[in-house]
Amino acid sequence: MKLTESHLRQIIREEMLLQEISRGSVLYHRSIEELEPGQKLGGGDHGNQGHGRKADAEEEFEKFRKAHYPNKPSRYGAVFLSPTPKSRFNSFGDLYKVKLSGNYHIADSRMFDAHQAPYNFDISEEDAIACYWNPGSSPNCPDVRDVNPKYLEVVTNKAVVVEKIGNDFVTEGDRIRVLKSPPVPVQKVVKGTSNDHELWREHPKIEEVYMTDNSKGESYDEYDAVLKTPSTWKVIYAKPHDIHRQQSTIKDRGEPGMNYAYDTYKKIHLRDGKVAPAYGAYNDSIEKLKFEEI
Image (tube, rainbow, N blue to C red; front, side, top):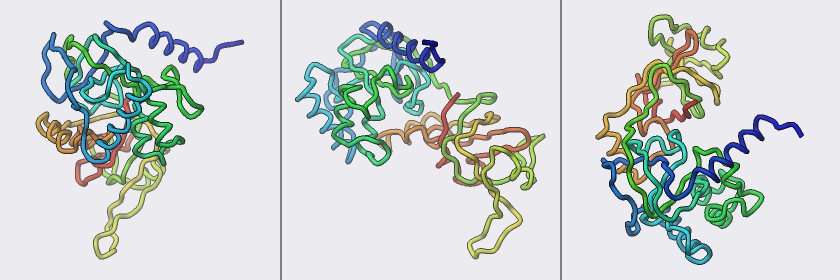
């Protein structure tokens, strides 16, 4: 049988997980606290308990683990690692290389989300818990070998910091895939771009262009545009929050906002040809922008 590209990628991913993730592996960890090389992580007590609904979920996940997989590390006080630096946890602080040194479990992090919002996943709350602790245990529960590595989390009770990589924000020249986009003003952002609403309307990555209204319902001679999603754009400008604002935002929320741009960035400007959507420039659009790096 001829191997397809997707099958080949799957085989490579399986080999990486089976051969590379083990005690002593160097993986990735994010922290809003400053960490030092050689610093030992883990061993805390209820360090990941959270608040409200998240705390309730943590308690249910812990009860299931104790009842069925007592030898696997608890999420309470655990260190959460990723096999790839570009993961779904990009807004969780600075990036570090760390060495896995304790007991560990590889999970699909989306199953924790599925437990709290099952209507977004084709799985029940109970099955989401079982799937988290035993990936591949049911038809709706993917094995970790079949999960995109950016969604995987390695839960461990011990790890040692190797080195700090730092912030890896998107910057000029990077390409991103926009997954969720609010309306943005039709405007000329930099030289070579256009505020011609008809040109924007004809652009293949623009879903809709419409005239804006004021509070009285009267139309201005100004326009907003809605991007098609998903669509790929080039970053021409990105301004992160200063590190103190970023850390404060994360701490105040209890947990970061699932890769929404606002958690990390103050402004992001994109471009494709003469069309240049600008988020955070003149409105609150940055708060609802969601994207992934390519």
